[in-house]
Length: 332
Image 1: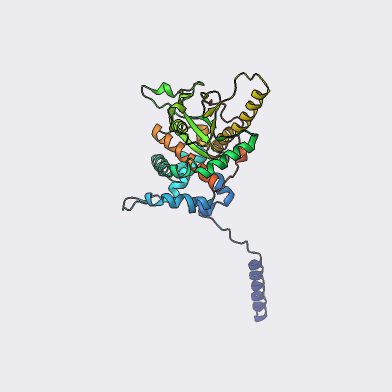
Image 2: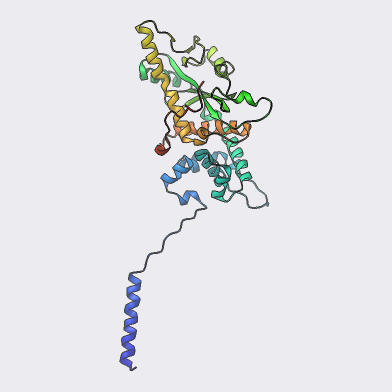
């Protein structure tokens, strides 16, 4: 091979190198699955954890992070962010704790402890996000309720919803079985005109009905005249000067108009229960945790629900919308 052949061969190699350089497949960026904040886009993150990244990082986590950090030299501690996201994932899916743990490489027992701990920490914020409004807001609520169907003087609407639980065991287990034969907690909620929760009671078993109200602090609040208006409830509640229920046998046009306005105004409660259980499907599918942890989860999710209302974080999970979401559980 003479020098000219060598030069031609080198020139050919340079040509091939140029072709390969121009047609090289770009490298694919591999996201870090260990960090859900970076791994998921905004929509996918919200779908899985029920809140935007901003609310998790800027609102929720900063309020509880100082109680989640443990300073010791034992093992590999789970970061506060992963603890919070593990708990939110459970709220948002209702999966078995083993499944939630496998997603992050965490044992089932650790997931249980995380859910209990995070729920208890969020419960500390309950009085901040679920509370009766001040005088000016009470007047505004009355105006907003009247704008719905013309019913004057309404401060809140009240109703109960059942949250399915596992058999708690013990001598009193059967008192948790509701009229449909399902173990549940009967949760009473008072709702404001902007679909916010004003009061919640999570301590009565599923067999308890209208006595939920009689044993609540809300009744005392109303009897002292601090509510700022009437409560609207269904016929499961007793009719009282501060608690108005539908007329069972309307005898004239005025009674029928009253019932229509009453029903249209109180419909907001059913809407709230639907949104609440769609946002946190663990409530709809049923809670399998111990009774104390179950109560903490319900209080915590109610707190987070109101946080979402306050921050106007109203993402709709359309593929999970279920009609008559309370029908399989029963109401008050």
